[in-house]
Length: 402
Ligand SMILES: C[S@@+](CC[C@H](N)C(=O)[O-])C[C@H]1O[C@@H](n2cnc3c(N)ncnc32)[C@H](O)[C@@H]1O
Image 1 (cartoon, rainbow, N blue to C red):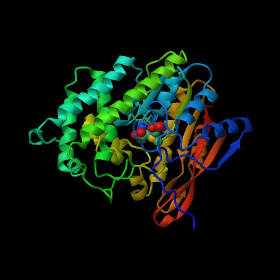
Image 2: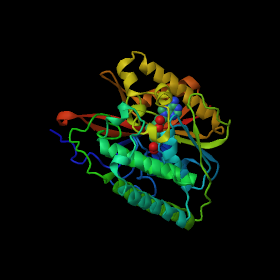
Image 3: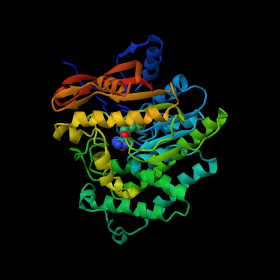
Image 4: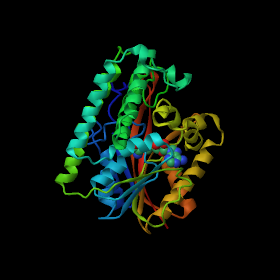
């Protein structure tokens, strides 16, 4: 019987597997090339800094822009998530616009695309160390309980919760706004590890959870600031060394179904939309909302394709298809005629049925009169309890406006 890999917690789980290219051979070959990534390789620049469910592999974004994006023009990602396409657009010297329904996503993407002077990246490290050294000296009894509500508080041991609240208050006191935003994202990057939550995308209490030692939060925060400072230095050096002009990316908090995008303004769209019935972003991030002052209800009501809907609503698949049709229509209208929209999307599950994402995309394109000249599909083995496995696929599909 096949065994699940021992180390399931690698940097990006949604990579690896046999690739099958289909459609027009030349395009299909390039799409397959985009998907051929090494799942074990350490993620460069700011890519590895913050976990995110269904993060795109940076090589996919990098190659997609290089192989399909022409020499110039704006890049669009209507589901920007943690900003992988944004980072790669910046590295390619391209203007970028990204949309997401969640401020948590947009703040991570914004922080990951900062092009900092050496002194400023060092400041990120110094501020982290300074907060940690001041926080250690604070008497735990003097730290006020955060007003975050029982639902969030019960996911931390009481001392860790107060430590997180103290770091958050200290961040609020930093005069420079960009630094405050960056450090808040740093705190977000360690939050799930500090909590009882099993992982970013598994929102149950970890069976092996043990409370962190007192003051571990501060050390972890300072370490993560140092790591980010180093990532910023690599990122900025890469841009400078290759003589790339940094173009400040734009991020819009909006619903991809309704957002008013400029018409025919982009030369390529690269995106990974929510997979059908696979993730529950508003649950995955619920511990983070208080940090960013985000209204969880906004995301909950607007999130497309949530697993919870696919479990409880008989019309979930139809709704997903209709929602995605609206998003694809919106994105295609924002692209210049003939420009490619590249969708990375994984198969999902509806009740006990598997849902083929490539068929959904082809159906949407047919409804919109758009072309799907080619795609590449990569097998993914999904491991469940008891070491049983099923095969699903992730697809990289090119859609072209009529
Ligand atoms: C697969 S993730 C994108 C991951 C991203 N490519 C990355 O590398 O981090 C899909 C994103 O779609 C967002 N989303 C869900 N419903 C949305 C909607 N109606 N409008 C815009 N974004 C939405 C989720 O918040 C999530 O960040």
